[in-house]
Length: 107
Image (cartoon, rainbow, N blue to C red):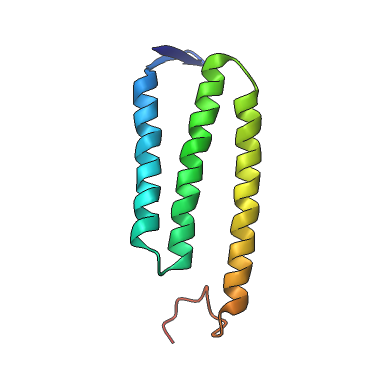
C-alpha cells in the first residue's frame, strides 16, 4: 500500500492494482501486435502501448523507491519511442504510392 497526496486529496494506491493495470495495458498491446500483423500503423500503435505500459511501470516503481533512475529511463524510453515512430511513419509514407495517407475522403 502506498499513499499518494495531491493538494488536499489523499489517495491510497496498492502496488498490486498498479501492476495489474500496466500488465493489462501490455497485454492489450501484445494482442494488437498479434492480431494486426498486416497493418503497419496498427501494429506500431500496439507496440507504443506496450512501451507506454513499461514506462508507467518504471516511473511508478521509481516513485515508490524514491530514486530518479526510473524517471530518467522513462524519459529516454519515451524519446526513443517517438523517434522510432517518426522513422516508421516516414518510411510508410515514402513507400505509399497513392500519396493520400491521411485523407479520408474515400475517393
